[in-house]
Image (cartoon, rainbow, N blue to C red):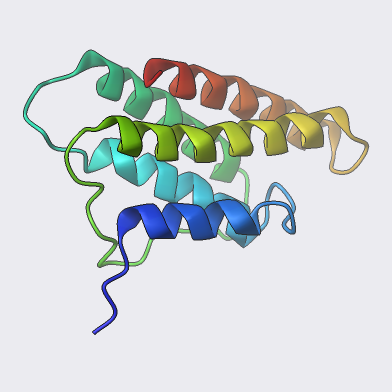
Amino acid sequence: MNATTYRTLLAQAASALAADDPDGPATRQALLLAAHAGLHHSDGTGDAGWDLYTAAITQAAHDVQADLDDPLILVSGIPAPGPDSIELRRTVVDLVRALADRYAKAAAGNSGSPWRRLIWAQVAHRLDDAAAELT
């Protein structure tokens, strides 16, 4: 049986970002996977950082997919992120920052409609906010 961990999935998602466009499936799956950390994080501490992270990143995921004809969802069986730790936060923040950079570069570029570039800029800002909550 293949015991893929959540952190392994984050690393795989991060490696796929450079080859995908901001509305592409790999980028959106990476965003959903990063949101999974907040939605399924459970250590019982009620950490406000995780709560604010979750609010920012789920709004970013909603914003990026709201106008697309083919919204994605995560498949069932994604491993839980596990208890809060410096390593978990670092891994999640690394992916979120890579996503923020991806969306910021797309927003500043010439591809996509002006409306999509505005959405990407807004998503980049939300992702920056989300990463700041865990650092």
